[in-house]
Length: 539
Image (cartoon, rainbow, N blue to C red; front, side, top):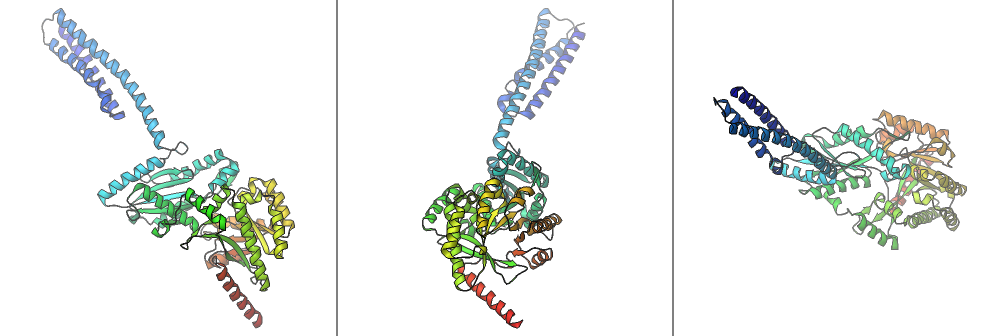
């Protein structure tokens, strides 16, 4: 009888011990902090003591009451400890889950569930340590969504978040598991690419941008999110996490400045990287003396090549010869309400130069960009009228370019302002067409003379059937609305000739001519006029 009871007790004790060990192992995998396991020795002591004492009883021919009481104490204590440990284990599991969620939320972005900038910097630091040991390299790649603030202004920040989530999902699809991907700021993503010497970075970025180059959908609108990429390499460009991230950002800003899809960091550009506070102070000082210049980029008129057209481009030169990109200081000017003064300076400088050229019997057409704030300015039309009268310039020589996005912020207001300008005899053009969200009904009601196709659709036209279809459709649409079509970003002869073959009216890009300062522009005009006179004399 004693042996039977003892054997049962031993079996129960072994089951309790096994259960306790399984719970301990499970808890160990969930939470490895030493304080978590302070209860385990007590529980295992009770259970193991109970098993040993039960085994001892099984060898006895007789058992005293005291021995049964001791066995019961061990048994009850062991079962109690197992039950308590089970409760504690479940509690620890819940605590560990809550702690995991807290840590995850601190290190991850809530919208995309990607690691945030804090986690990114920590990971870059760890990567640097590992690469120092293994003597390997890595590349830091920043992907910045272009003009994302315009999307938030048109659709709202909530809808912008939907687009960001879609964009990040597409990024995750492209990025392989071993590549670390993070959201480093609102519309900026960063990845760490190991062993860049075994990967063609240019090809990798082209493939990435090609994969991302498909419309996203919001409110039944197809939205094309273009992006610019900056690259910094370890250890060539820095051995510090913060510094290498900043240099990748410098490369990205440089790519925007030169209007390239991507750029690798160059030390020569770092001295001209300013944060927003520094740039705002510099702009404030520049505004006092209007330290700006106008450059002119020639635009080819396909049907009438003897008619000269320029786009006037504002430049902000610094004392060392470097020019701050308009992409960097125009948004600041809009935020600080100094854009009106800049626009008036550009317009008056353009009219003054047109008057100088008129005295030289040169009558080119000049295109000038307006900002979103200018479209809301009721004083713009009277100011233009005053300039036309003051400089006695033919208003037909001026074309004002308005981005599609700025026009759509307040279509009713834009239409009123543009119709007043149109009555002065000035032509109107939609710039960056295809990157905004205008409907055909609104577009058809605007007094537009010209549509300029955004460079993001033009540059890879010969290699992308989607972009080729978009450009062809845009040309057909524009001609149906009695509008001219300009293609910007034309860098090669093959691309220029193809655009001409499909009916494009004007070609703009480095293939035909680069932006030039005034002296270079005058030289270009004189050479062009000389060539035209020779051709005319031969005919």
